[in-house]
Image (cartoon, rainbow, N blue to C red):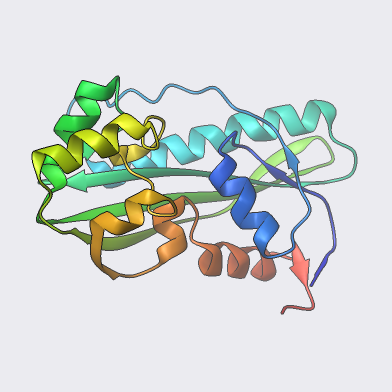
Length: 204
């Protein structure tokens, strides 16, 4: 797999970094700081797309100011949704416990919005946006299990307060859709977007 130009990941997420590294991509990291508050009346699909787009915009600003060449810039945002309500990152362990109680014994959706852009000649352009949703089911969890899992701290910085790539894998009984999407970046769809727009050639 060969990259034709440089790639910038507009995210500080170690999960997204690890996923891109897993498929052999080389990239620089620009950590973005954008408003992730949910606006009044903002639906989950609109919210996650808006945040990914804002991360892309900020990432392209940073790349334009500091990167050599004409880099592609990749940004993403992941949310957990249950009963049409977004579960963000827990504020503390009590909040994490409440989230896990809400997810116990039922299904929920994980949606990642991905935005891809490019900086060329000092100008910024959005190339494509996409969103991938995976349906995930949790087994019924006892109060003791929820407390012990929350206490591990594994879900402290993760939407929905769990990590499917860690101990949280034992909470999941079934999944319909992309596994890497639940981790934080749908690899197949992201790679195809890069291929389509010329960021990666000679794939696979």
